[in-house]
Length: 339
Image 1 (cartoon, rainbow, N blue to C red):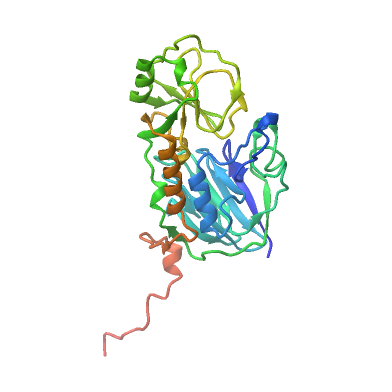
Image 2: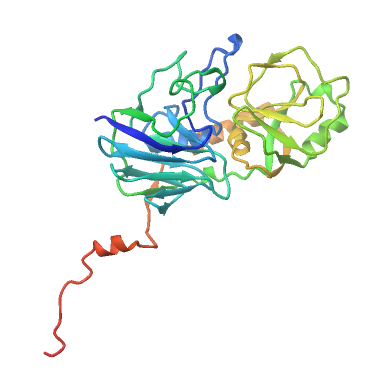
């Protein structure tokens, strides 16, 4: 079965992402991919897709969609976003079947910065360099290399109806406060005196308001370099923490540049990338140094947490719109009081 997902409204930075475009960093081509890999994989797994399948990454700007040419199963995974079906609130992590004529909306909430919408099927966009991940700065991947916009229609191959009535995902691992972010020190922590490394770890740091898919900017007490802030440019991985001349750390994220010439005091470990990405502006945090071995164990623990099957529970409605009540047969007989 085929169907289409119509984009009714989309805020900035709403893009198609898969697991990323890997193997091209040496040519200056960034991987892109999801800002929160765990939430992204959760949505895909719950939809019955491979963990790295193409899905929609929704920013705080929000998204509204409708199904065309038939019903379509959808899964949303978020923490703190406001999800609604025809204006009726749903859980922030939910699976449902979207019938034609109905509208599913995603709006920013009290927490979280990124939400993921996976379809039960395959979003049919052609891969570029082996991936569908969108990198808007270089117009690569996704839908013509750009963010999604109102009026776009995404073809869905092998479409399935999915969960039917809304089902809440039982996914407690999505709730990850960003108060402590684990890092592996280096590779250029020796560009800072020991007291400055201690200051970096102690913080506190505040997530700034000018971050995007490329980087997270931190505000706090500036760090001092031991001998200048320039190095020979080398490769950048997601989570690398550069310290430019002004002394305020910059954490490079999914749309990072391929190389950089500022010393990198530390690197955020894989399982904490999503934790940091979901931190809204104004969030206060500090860093905790761990070993590479501890980082590997944390990655394995995360993989075990996200199993192949994600439990779901029926959504219990607590409020009922008038049209819903009018559609029910609430009277099963009439009694004449005179008899």
